[in-house]
Amino acid sequence: MKVLLISANVTLSPYPLYPLGVSIIAAALTRAGHAVRQADLLQQNASLEAIGREVRDFGPDLVGISVRNIDNVNLLHEQYYIQNVKNIVSAVRAASHAKVLLGGAGFSLIPELILKETGADYGIIGEGEVLAVEFANNAAKGVYPKETLISSPTKLPGAQITAALYDERLLDFYLHSGNIASVQTKRGCAHKCVYCTYPLLEGAELRKREPRAVVDDIELLRDKFKTKYIFFVDSVFNDDENAYLEVVDEMVRRKVNIPWTAFFKPGGLTDELVERMKQTGFCAAEVGTDAACDTTLKKMGKSFSFKDVIECNELFARHKIATSHFFMFGGPGETTETVQEGIRNILGLRQCVAFIFMGIRILPQTPLARLAIREKLIAPDDGLLQPVYYLSPAVDKQWLEETLTKAFADVRHCVFPPDAMDNSLQVLHKLGYTGPMWDLLLPGGKPRERTRNAAK
Image 1: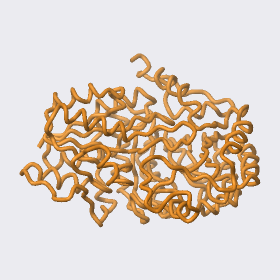
Image 2 (image 1 turned 60 degrees about the horizontal axis):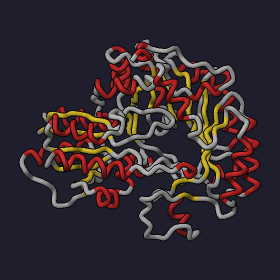
Image 3 (image 1 turned 90 degrees about the vertical axis):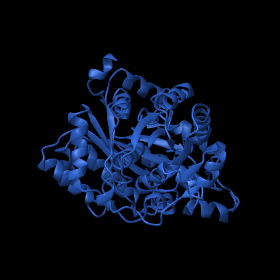
């Protein structure tokens, strides 16, 4: 069966990220004997005409569309992405009679409403490796499920998580947009952040891939595709079970050294561990701090204090690891006093970049959604497909925006709104500079050398 897989993502913030989920499904389908082509709306410059040509040229029997994000979770500059998915479905319909199957992390959060909104035929909720293959195998025989939404109560063991089938055409685009390639080492998140959907999507238990398989991916990206920078897409890289150290040790054993970054949580790290990671190319950390004082950290469900944040930041600074933090103001427990305390705390952090959000996007089935219902900020039957943000009833929206704008207006390394630097960073990527580029905001920050991609 001929299957066309399309990534619907168009977000560039904070940098373009290779559609790993599509390539994982492509690998599973290819192993099952199906002919697969991968396409990407971002790589096609969001051109529906180009997507239509992909469909006509390939002539698929089945089209899968991956929905990574519903919106950009930025209250001050909202962008809603489901209309893009609807437009892709229409473009496919105009060029083919193939069935359209939706999937991806964003789709799995609100599947019924997204399927209805876009007019696609079917949708897969959750992990798609097994379900997509089963769907394609049956569709090849002319057999389709009675239900439009398909899910499985079980999750893949870590050793069975499929390695991505990196697509040369797509990867070339992303390597020309920052030279960053995506790698996954595990799935699952045991943390209890009130707003987060990772436990809903991936489960609370860690399912780790074989370290050898992870490093095989890294070597493939480095040697075959000439990748210059790796981003580990795990919800938290430095997990409490130390699965990340198995990957690091395998990289050390095989003498693999390539610049990389990942999401980190404060705590559990030492000078020795950071030095060990640096042997493999660790050079930047994106810290999910989320709240800026102890009161709001606790209300966000965090297991660490702001003292832990400071210690983590100092640890990375000592080792010259470029560090960024992400903060959300206006969450549960926020007051005018905690806002002012949080601003002082952020300004007191040294040698780091802070991206500052206002409000928290409410997503179904999260503790934050339940809190918002109790506080009558949303109705129990609100599907939350259109963006809705939590703002503490104790804080006025206009006051909060004005206060944050004034506090960070002249602070180079504090970015508010969080997308304020996007255009400048994208220009540098197009010129051939590698890496996330926000490290340029650090004192003395310099871009990595331009690569061979700069000439294109």
